[in-house]
Length: 288
Image (cartoon, rainbow, N blue to C red; front, side, top):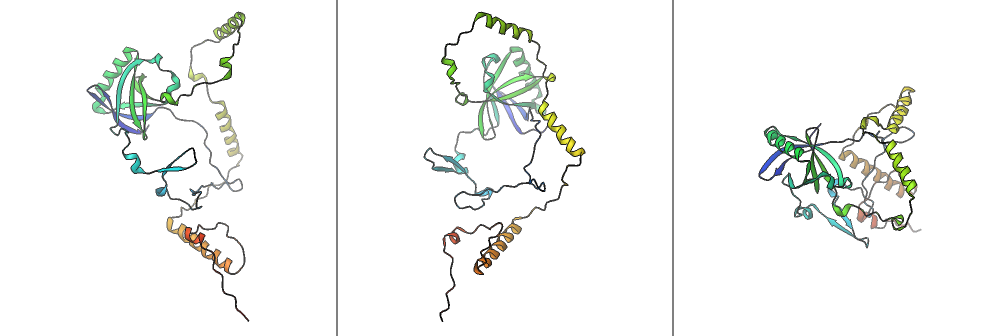
């Protein structure tokens, strides 16, 4: 595993340097969007809806849409003064019984590994927390977002589980909750009996993703049947080549318009904004 963040657990006057690792991974079969005819990869461009121009990453900002449809544009400078912690600390706020925290709050799980100099205080806090039967409620800033989280022990390692904020949990507002639905005692007893007969210790190893396995078999069958399209090396065009291609296409399009062919290029190059607004100049007609 590769660490994705380095920081420290701040517990009173004790600081424990740690590395953060993602504790889970998705095992989905991933696909690319391709052209059905030749298997070529489909690529997308970042195009502005106002002027139709392709936009470079460096010119992209964050925009907040108002209820009126107006856009408030925020730049990097606007984010600099926000109260987001950059101290790379996992601050312990309190300790609480694990059963008091509803699992609906949990978002993502991470492992914490101590640095060499932090191994002893790490083990000390781990053992104390494990014997207490509680979890630590902490605050941490990851990926430009501050989150509540919990620290608990699993297989001798701290697990950091980021949490949603209370106002991010939706209230279930369903009509049947207001209805007076009667359940007969016999029906309740039968349901409880069914639960009792299906009760057993949970073993996650007994379950597997049957859909993913079946999909993988379909892919393997196509490979065995030679239903594959040979991979072709694609040359990455640099900015200068792209610019020359766009200029060449523009020149060819202008020539066709002047010669009255009326044919449109397959991929018209984006024109400068001022040129789009300016009417096309016509040649003066010769008088007899």
